[in-house]
Image 1: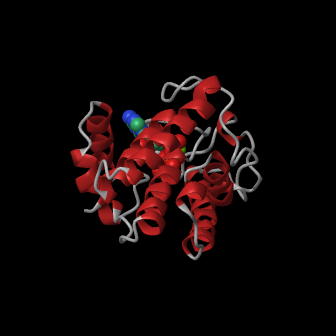
Image 2: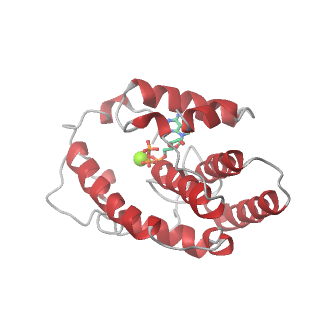
Length: 198
Ligand SMILES: Nc1ncnc2c1ncn2[C@@H]1O[C@H](COP(=O)(O)OP(=O)(O)OP(=O)(O)O)[C@@H](O)[C@H]1O
Ligand SMILES: [Mg+2]
């Protein structure tokens, strides 16, 4: 996790730790892994974007875990399961469920009380869920799709553009994205709001 420059190159071999739970034994490099994950995510998007979902369904642990499973279940055995170890980002592993429930309750309150405009509801949710860091990996992509689901299904507004390019790797847009995430960590959600529509 984090900006580990050694792992950006698509040719970088996966180490033993990174292969735990990998369901496709022929995958040996970061680039191959990215491709399989991307294909799995595209299937998940087709599944979810055509679906009618209520606010209560979307803002539930069951759906949030199921989405992660749909996104990564062909690649990782642990897809859809909360992490069982602590990381340098995220809440304590035992707090994940409670923190997620709190986030879902808060978000439901924001929606019912018009606390924030639609984009801000989705982006605040996205930032909070990635800060909880529910899963061993794939949290960033999962959080962006959750924001897309909230803006589309709950608010009926257009999907986010997320800088219009892949945020994996070490591109310029990735740097803008991470800077915006850091600003949000510090309490300023505005740059992430702008980025999501850029
Ligand atoms: N310094 C940081 N470097 C990278 N990610 C960070 C950092 N601080 C917070 N994050 C958040 O963690 C997410 C990455 O978590 P994780 O690796 O589980 O997700 P991913 O889907 O594999 O990655 P990505 O979001 O890069 O596609 C980022 O999307 C970002 O929101
Ligand atoms: Mg990752």
